[in-house]
Image (tube, rainbow, N blue to C red; front, side):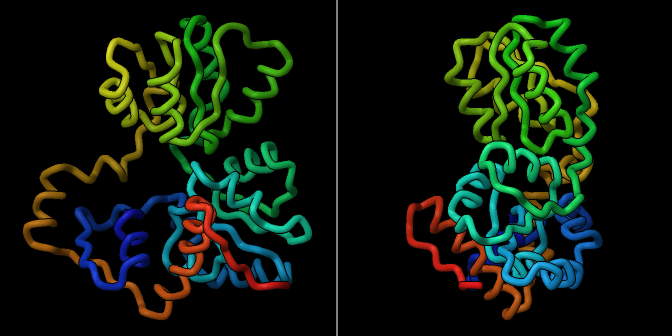
Length: 267
């Protein structure tokens, strides 16, 4: 479970119980493969002076070996903040990395990891849904394996009709509420549909793939959350040295999103 680890690193005094043990994000535990910071250290050693940007779903140990943390919402801003003359290592999601190369024009060294849920939403799913719902606006998460091919086809004129928007989870929700479209095809984990329906009542939201279900997220239930809060267990602990180093990557990210100066060691 990523969020409690993230919060535990950011705060040394608050106790955070974990609602369900054994629910690691596969994207994060493959960042780099096996959830070992040692592999990241080896990768970084091959690129002296490079800046490491790791996705929020990575472990505290991987964040401790990183210069910046990022989310899908602020990843572009983080990449743009890094001086042009610095190499960038991005982990773990290769599809998000490819999207960042496309929107920033920067060349990144990208770890070949993926989110199994987003990677499973392929162009065939989208073709079928767009054929069945030609008036629907398409919302795609940048971790989807179909993002690059879909945008290429849009630019080539293969897709007609309403807009195709690549956005983070929060960006999708905001777009759904603000867009004049009445129907949306949503290419991300299906759990977001309930929230969208609450935020934009009267609009229709269709999963790009009904199979886009994260089994790990679904293990966390309201009952387990309530029990964890009642018992304040199991508790998350992070080594103090690891937490301090990981917090630096998080603080640099927050400085960018909050428009504060972010210091980065020179090569």
